[in-house]
View (cartoon, rainbow, N blue to C red):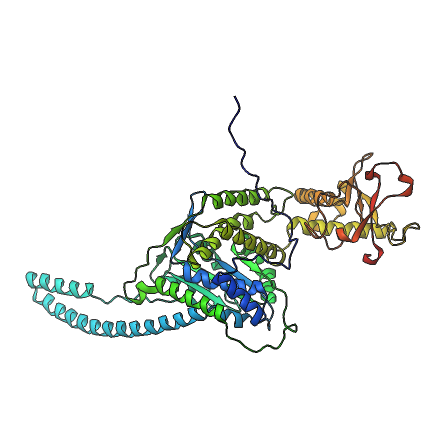
Length: 557
């Protein structure tokens, strides 16, 4: 009997790097979200990805308190995003951010004015209450002296009643926070409404040294967990169900300084892995002088942001102080099937030798970021029904593009790549000392040159190799680095004796090395894969392709 079982569609493969780094995904042309991004790109003359990150930050702040999303696995998550744009001074970070956050900034100003009115009323109530409590305490003291048990009991009831009437501080609505440390953000989300956004074009408060120890609080907020704050001198509290968007823009030098000092610590706790990161190309010096025209699409964008934010803030503005019931979005059946293919592809890419082998913490957050973004866009655009494949595919493509920027500009070099680079430099120095450099062009192909070669043993490397890879305790790191160079075609195991042969140019393989320098990983001391050519020695005619070898172009030596 034939089986009716149908094999599931294959996962969406995750490739190394970015084959089209200058092109970003495009969303529905008629959407408010996309048309405002294009308008900012054309009229403000900023990179598309910078405008997109600003728009996503505004959408996340406006919608995070109104909508949750259920993954196709059944897991329900909330929707705030953590966004980071790296751009130099003069790239109009503040200009474009203020355009997309115009409605939010205005709403925040209104909320703060409401806060001030509520605070003044509360302070007046406290003064009146304190006066009344003081008088009742004084009366209670007199009654105690009479030793009249019945009178004392009645006076105690009166005192208890006034203490029960102590005015409670109002729950202030607030939308934006600027230049606040993680600890201050948690406190403010507890004291004010439990949702908001940190919007800044400098982000020094987050990436300063004193804030690193508190980044776990932001991790917990992103995950949707409870933040417990225990304090000795003041009242402890638990922050539950809070939603916080991070829309950060800063100069690359700030991040470089942070990574050099505290980057390993931040990566270890998974803080950086949650970010969607973009480093747009520089525009300063390339812009044209344009007349400032009306921006109808950005105006429509802000009008929609305002309507959504008013809906989210209504309970606090009206004095109720209770959140609105959030809508839970789901994916259509077709989108759910595509989601699983994306998810499996990312899971497969975390295997050894695959694109996310050294970035598993980051990769494990990608599909949740995709899910959140898809839900935010679906809700912001006012679509009915479940999330469609179009919105899901766009969100996946954006997150994957951000992932390549994360790996290149934020994640730092994997340890095995640093170790392989140190080994390659050591081998080249050995070759130079032994006089084994062979950089002369070939007679029959003068545009090509041979690279340096050297032979070595594992024992020699453990004794005389790079310091970081010497000794028994570093054996695993040494072998992993050797294995990487072998996969990149620069190292071969000797067949006739124990040991290895290292070559500056690639040993021939068909169809080529498993990993390519400058494509999958980058070893700075070795020529890039694109800088080499396959050469077939004339004496090898009639032999297989594997008898040839790769040579380096002299201009790259």
